[in-house]
Length: 230
Image (cartoon, rainbow, N blue to C red; front, side):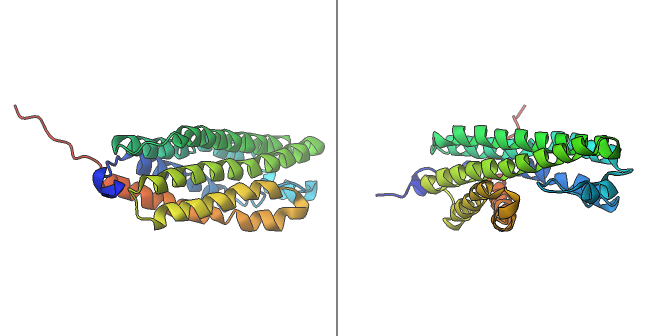
């Protein structure tokens, strides 16, 4: 019997790689705010003394970072839609990809809420220290959900890729491992378990490798445009 990959050649697109590059632009804001001395990050358990040195004078920069994220993090959704469309075009669609798109959209929504609360904490600052700490802790809890939802979406996407037999087997396996690690990290967002959760979020590195590898492969397999002859 012929393998599915031979019977159904991979038909790529440029959407997934475009989404990956759009998403990775989050680092523009991260590097910029770090250069301004914003050492605080979204976490549970930070104290007033931990937060104020980073927030003071950087309230506008942190709020702009949240706005920047609203423009670039949608690239994660675009990536998964691009993969779903590639599977459909290749005749190897999988129903789990609809779920993967929804869950990735949820992860983006969680992350935007995370940084809206983080920016709100910075705006409250020393004038409202109790509110500042409450907002910071809330953003930290939401941040854990970001990794969990993104991991589930990655795992589902990698499973659909594996079942399609259109990709080098190492690629979906990489996604399955990274997705599982990220998904499990959501169970360890409590401060007492933060070391375990932090280690599991290392699956993000596998996610980034997976998204660029898959994106480049789909880009290379994208149909060439044929100019109409006049």
